[in-house]
Length: 393
Ligand code: GLA
Picture: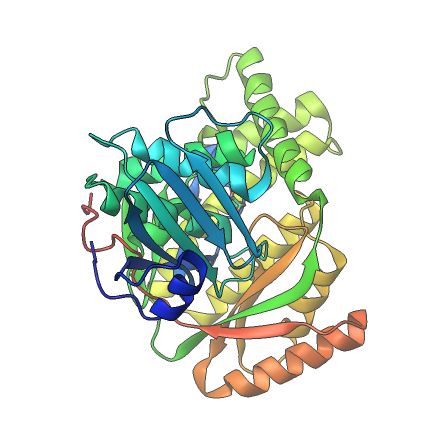
């Protein structure tokens, strides 16, 4: 891992009043090309680490105090590793303290630290700002305490911290993609075996993220509800004597059986159909990407979006409008909502030489449909922070 001079020492000194050279890490965000709400069902996903970052800088202190300053929240949080965690702590402070304490468990001796967190990743925009935040805190804590991190173990630690301290029962996609992605590639992850494969993105395609500007409060509760529904479906199958561990194991013929049990309009049937077909789409999309097959990837993105809209019901009017505007824009290869849903961003594959035209047309189409201004970020696919250390399976 890196240990290089801080690029903006003045800011660190302004906040912590030091003068010594801290260490830093820049953790990328991620955008998921396809495979939505499949990771916590042991399924397949195809994310990309992108060049928007959470930048974490840290320096050891002579005492046992840990002080974390987040520029995104404009606040500082201080705690001593010698005391228990305050049970009434909430929000980003609880999450940050949880990640740091969890990482420190592997330290021989726990050092105090000053840590600065800066973002150029939109918070809550579906680009995994929270997994990047946690990974950055974990890496800096590990480096300052001489703790060795192993990518797959570290990904699990970060995922568990998100469950325990942020209250989000997320899957493993975000953590693995920001750790193990490779430049100019998407990362195909089998979320059951944790096998990974790097799928090259065609050089004449660009990757554009369009932000609807919408953040729905609903996102957390709806996410938990979807997880619960998926567990319920698995139990339904078990009651019928069909031994499955998760929705990853459901076949098309099992879907027919489920329809007989629940009836064709039941919400659980719709949820299950999304997961089963989305898993198939991910594998097909990986092949289409390898073959630079524009038509195929365009169709798969469209099917995925429609399925998230109608069967999994995690889209919203603004995401639908942004995607429809993109489908009609010049240069569009493929467009769909990305991430957990209920606002946030869409992901778009675009013919590189038409990127400017694509962005302008999509943004004005979005404005016409919703009366709102969206924003566009053209991104590149980059290495994750441990991409060269992760063992290929
Ligand atoms: C969020 C979670 C991920 C994944 C996506 C939906 O981003 O953090 O684990 O479940 O939603 O695909």
